Length: 182
Image (cartoon, rainbow, N blue to C red):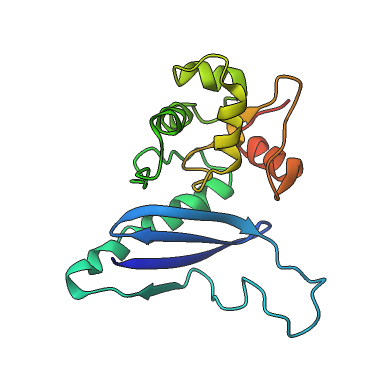
């Protein structure tokens, strides 16, 4: 399988990473700032990348086309983080790992428009599984493709809700980019 790893840097956000397999996005790590609290010389995720550098591993010549999509996605990400209205619906993603329920939640999430939010309960209902809000939340917590499957657009019934290790502040910044005020 052809796998390409693409690092991208966004001013004010940090460095993120995308992984593609044969033109399909399989994983996305959102940009994070460099950890300056680590001791000097300590390895950090961002130290092995230059700005928008692509590293391709195990690519056969007949699969080299798999890396051609990555610059398009990186450009979209840069535009998104610059505050432009950008959609990721056309980005082909890997959902082969999903159960039918997870696939329904992913599809429902991809249909939530830019600048709008839904609650976990509303997401479950949109996916055809009313009262499965906790399961929808679990899907969001394990989302491999943030922004492309925009789980930041899912909020708790009583407020913003969590956003994993990146925290509520990060989620709030993403929503603010889209003009959402809670």
